[in-house]
View 1 (cartoon, helix red, strand yellow):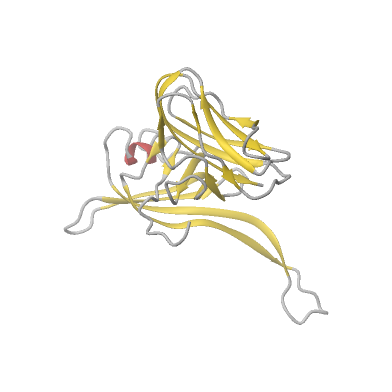
View 2: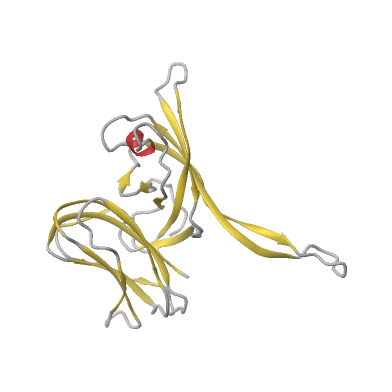
Amino acid sequence: MAKTSGLDTRIYANGTDLSGDVSALSGVGMSQNLLDVTTLDLSATARLAGLKDGSVSCSAFFDNAAGKGHSVWTSLSGKIPIADQNVLIPLSATIGEPALFLVSKQGTYNVERPSGGPVSCSVDYSAANGTSPDFGELLTGGKVSDSSGTTYTAVDNGASSSSGIRAMIQAFSLTSGSATCTIQDSADDITYATLGAFTAVTGQTSELLSVSGTVERYVRLLTSGTFSTLVVCVAFIRL
């Protein structure tokens, strides 16, 4: 992915596509504490890497329709949700392109009515539960629809790695049945083995999956099962 316009940027939270309400995103990324360990015998600062953090701020239009922004951001009968939320932000609609995913807490929900303008709102998500926010890679071409089991094109990372992967699924809907979304790897893009699988999808859901051990050069997503019309987006990162 080279320079991009951002036209394919989206935001998904807990299996809900919020892109139709959110007008702008800021602070999409992560930070890292730097610990000062400068000693007397040094003439410049020395630092160690510390805790990671991440956040994203959303500017949005107020939308009180079912399944839209207001119902997600006040899911507890008007209260800000207190549970962890899986947030996935694809920066493209192409397999292998970047996507940020973080397990977060929602910190704010503020509604504004500017003079002469539409009712708007702002929402902030911050990383939670000790899981590092990551810029991973898409295993689907953004948000996709499968009418039956599908094998997706593999992401080629050029070499194997030894520390596992972390992956996030956003399943927006399933018309019927049960769908299994499996992440596979391969050394040669011919013979594939299972790295890990998300919990079987039976409706709207999201999940963070962690897998340890060796990961071969090629990684892909496979959907299977007896189902119809699975709408889903999946991203992963090597650890």
